[in-house]
Image (tube, rainbow, N blue to C red; front, side):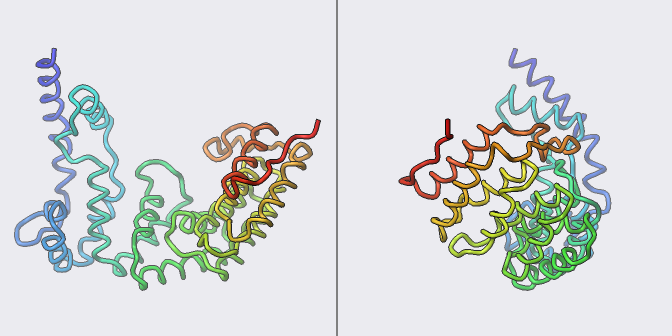
Length: 310
């Protein structure tokens, strides 16, 4: 039986690699006669000089690799190798290609930021694997140089100030994913977005506050305000966002207690147009109250937990 599995796997490898080989090599830059993808598999002492020599000429290739997706046949092959043979597939998967693209873009640093920002704001973010804007945001979040972070921050400020809901949506996601540091100045802009009539914008603005340093107060007023939001999912996001706000524990716990008592009177709206965001339903009073008690316990394990009144 195992022999049959291996035979089937060998055939599958041949087909997948045959389909992929042209795609791998199209427009791929070379350095000293070797493809860039090969350099990026090696040690930094090898791929850094290669990337520096190729420079921004590598951007089209790296950005395309960053958006890699496994074909249906490729996904089947990955499942076969992992489940049948307990082994990784012998070809380069989309996950591997995206990882190496991020390595190369990281070497380019500030030279790659404009292209990544253009990709990040190219269209409203969706959370699909290989989605261009999402992959660009993840990559920007990995940049740690002051120059790259400063460039990203300026783009986020411009987007939040633009009044364009699509750009504000993506800017808040960049903050939520850690692509720029949330500070007092940015927090004021995020708070403005959190008062939007669009529930998706309010939700992602609340999510963006997770990128605030846990050691100091800051986003609590915004989160307290959203505890009374008409959307259940946004209230839950605000409750979750208060979990690490231990710098002002007493104030946070008091606000959560009030939310616990007031939850039965709150609207129970869910957004059916975004099931992944609003979960397609409105959580019950009991579910929301359970989350409140969980967060209170996380902040202070010794705190007396609120109890529903009979």
